[in-house]
Image 1 (cartoon, helix red, strand yellow):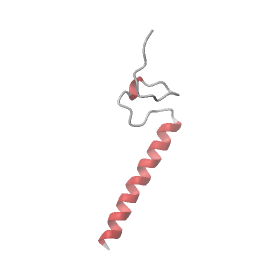
Image 2 (cartoon, helix red, strand yellow):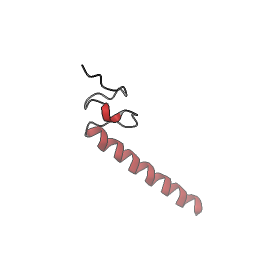
Image 3 (cartoon, helix red, strand yellow):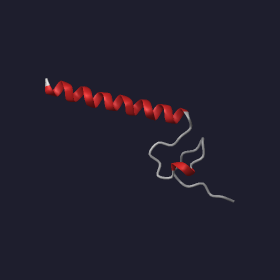
Image 4 (tube, one colour):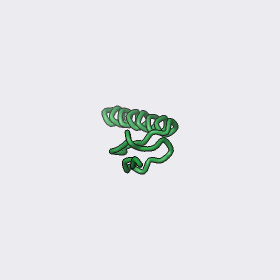
Length: 52
C-alpha cells in the first residue's frame, strides 16, 4: 500500500511539472535557462542577449 501512495505522489509531481513546462513554452518562456531573463521570446539559447 505504501508503494502505491509513493508512486501516486511522484506521478502527481511529474504531471504538474509537465503542465508547467508546456504552459511556459506556450508563453514563450525559457525553462531551466540560467539567463532566462535575458532570453528572447522566440529563442531560448541560454546565452544572454547582446546589446548593440
